Length: 478
Image 1 (cartoon, one colour):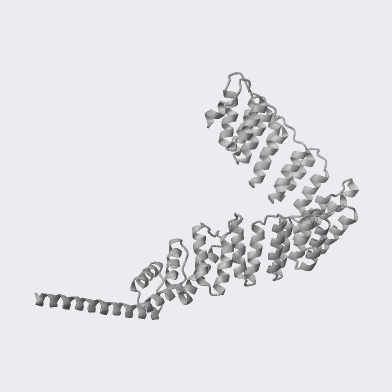
Image 2: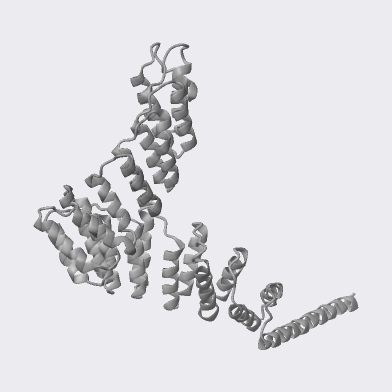
């Protein structure tokens, strides 16, 4: 493939040709081959400029190859190629995307080594990355540094500062103070300013204050965006004011503002919290009819709400829809449905869901591991008491192999069931495991085991006697 790429070059390699070929290659490694071969094809010919360097750095950042991207920065300096602010910002944004805000700030400070003077655009970009990643103390220090370098505030920079202060209940009043002082200092708050404050107020349950700001927006002719509406709808739902949230949703649609996936998900959450999960399902269907694609939050909200109301069948159907969309449910969602099935004594179906999790390699995280273990134990108990004892044993073996603890009551129940069935092999296997774990059977289980061993010995003796008598008869006939 690489040879074919090199053979595409004309005798006069141009920047436009290099850019076109780099963009055409989906595979990042092949794009690197194109980039390198452009200068290697003809000696003393083509040299990369800011455009081709910038494009290749952007491709590397998109592939999370940050070390290689920064290596190209160094090469640009060596080749005396000017490095624009946008090239630096593409790397900063890349680090922000992968939640490495301090690396973004490091690259920002590197600009001066390349004689690239950062503008307000760079300061705001890095400040926003720090705020998004909750590096609030660092963000506030960075804002002070911005002011110290002589950068005057703008509505955009004040908006990011307000967003930082809205992240914490203790600094929310400071955010409101800045907002109130903006007009007197020549800065008119915009829809983003209002939206940020409304979101912050809703987050800390100051719904009345958020509603007042929302009314103020309309008074001054600052039209709320879908984000603003969604923030307030979510806040109303969280404060269990569903009827007002519905009215606001209807007002929004009436004004021609199209709800997004977050708007629908917020309202669905309100329905589910108010035990109206079927209404939430209807909203899901409306959302899909409007060509809005549900996300993980949408489906999780619905499954949790349906399971809370005991509508396990409906929750299972939502899980199927989720999988058909190509989204992978986590262990928590499976756990909700499995517990719901256990509550309805549908233990065989619950066990099938556990098998599905294993086949799909869906495992819990450290926080949900203990809950996962309790779910397994609940299914084993149900199968032992009301279902298929052999399936319970297979699930028990699966638990052992995967390091999931089996509680002592389940071990004793399994032992008792196999003793009553006269299955010495499986009872003995469980006894072995119990001894390894230092878990002794109860006194009545010991009694059943001894009886089982005694019955087995008597059966073995009878079998030996029968075999001996048959042998003796055969010998006498001979």
